[in-house]
Image (cartoon, rainbow, N blue to C red; front, side):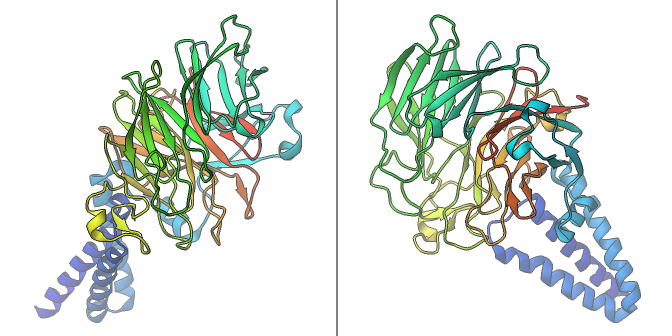
Length: 458
């Protein structure tokens, strides 16, 4: 009787150990000490079972209890459960999903695209090179007529692209505006293109409809441009206000200018501006949720804390919210050199922690995609890729499943392949959903824009 009781206790501890381990993936915890829970449960449980039934049966019991735990977690969290294929990829470091060939027109098979490029995906998609750009492509925006604008800060220019014959490839590339100052964020509203430069916010208009901006108005000037993060990103809410992100001037410091490391709310008509949220080191990606009410942002964590810290973040932006930088990161974790728990308890935690140094830039909700439901109920995040990590990470596009307006889990692999044999031939920047239901993605290393289309929309 005692042996049976010990065996039952051991099996229960194994199930609990597996559950706690798999739940770390579905409900990320805020502290690494959580790893001790599954470790202790599995170690003690395995010791008890091994003592009662021996090595061979212990292996069988381990497999059965792991399978039971996987079924339980998948039932509780179907959108962020555990797949055997996913576990195999994680531990064996194999390539994700299936390999697909990037479709490139003959005329574009030069430079980085002179050789065949292979991407990796879990989805049933096709990817083609929509356009080559004259310089490093950054942020994207569609106008009401289906024209695609792309900012190219290195050229101080904005270009307009059009797919007139609707074959999935741009056949018109026109210089919309030049002689700007590192234009980055773009928002189209009515017949106006709002453009964020490092020191000011502009409104551009094409009055005579010749595909060139012929009228410019300064909406807001005097933005801090004294070094550090210079990119400025934009989003427009249903309230008609523009939301502008301004990164920090440093890696980790107490900013004297409160407009730094913040998101500002701006009236596009009057130029009236106020700080909307702070404690955001470099929120490059901004996007409103499907209903247009909730603002979300990607945030790039600080450097010089090693390969695994701090996590990059996805945050839901609340008016007046403080997201912790430079004193805290992630789930209210104190920065080892600057913060403490007392400070962090008054900040807002991240909604999703991402792999450190992935450099999440542009983000886009997929609700308007011509794609199966799970892909529409996702936030797409472009990982620009690490520059300061011993083993490179990022260089891909992930998706974060959403349920009832909230993210579920830490994100899923969606499209990769820009990092080959440790060398990056491309660096994703910003996704956007097009009026045709396809997902478009800019790349500032390959000077390209890709078009991603689902083969099956059901």
